[in-house]
Image 1 (spheres, rainbow, N blue to C red):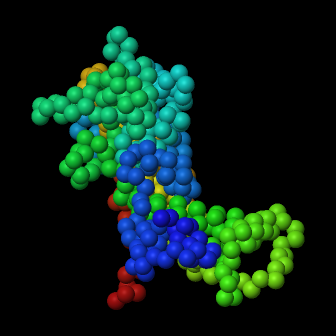
Image 2: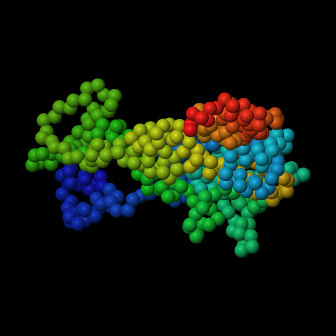
Image 3: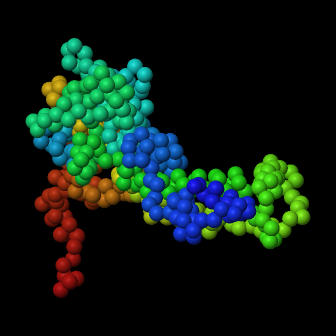
Length: 444
């Protein structure tokens, strides 16, 4: 028996009685007390209930992916293989120029501009990052020419990919499309990006951040649904019943419901109802204020921001400011969320290039034009001006600028008049002249 049938029996005067324990059990089952009804644990659900169904999830992921997609990539020739390892851990611009040399004429540069015939790099990389953030996996199909050169890159929706398990020597046998099971890709054709997972049952797949946050996404969606429902229904749910001895008949209850529906509409002009019946109102549930939906929404936003490693203050949460200004918060989102995505793709893409081409090339991203990551030029230049032990060319390298070929720019200049250090020595003639002007008797 459904909850509306139980309530109809109670308030419409039907005499069918139920044991008290039976009524409590039915109401509890109908309302859903007990275990929470979480969103399903699968990639399609993470997309539909997360990115497509929750404004907070959409805001966070789209913010990350759009910024990540705007970062340029280039092809480089490796100049120093040993220093390349250091550069990966400490990617300073001055070090990058010592390790890598840009090769803008390499054929791969075209792929980094237009990865396929339908997309530019910005849109393509948004997809790469978006699927990984949503589902924990990103599958990229590589298409090569007969010569073996890379021609195109395509993102395959991760909810449509099934990993075919191989054996101990070859853990992955292939990748199959779930909507067309006749299409199977070899492991060499797919670049698979994934998050680490401790789940031993799904080691070949990445862990979706939304899987860890299923409860908060479920609660957040329920909060938005309840707020919308309350606004559409002009308040919380309640029951109208007779206050007299005689209960309402089914016909009377139906007429009252029809009048309430007509008058309770937000578009209704005359919202007063006249009746001679003695009625009473029994509220069912709590109001949004009593449920503290606004406070819960803030906590849900902060939890989701923690899951995706971004500051919540960038998403209209002014009460949770942890950084002194917006620029520092913007720097944090690059450091904690965007750069890890870029690094993951860079390393896996370069691994694939090394296995399939054997060329001495390296694909890397360029963060030099990101305002949030630039040093405070005023304080940096002031600090370098006082660092007299550095040559002018070394200071230019620290600023990320080209060095000068002037030999004097490779000398150390001391502060006394800013002359080369080898010209600051005092000659014997100058020393004799200075001694003659000094009166040592004055100090006896």
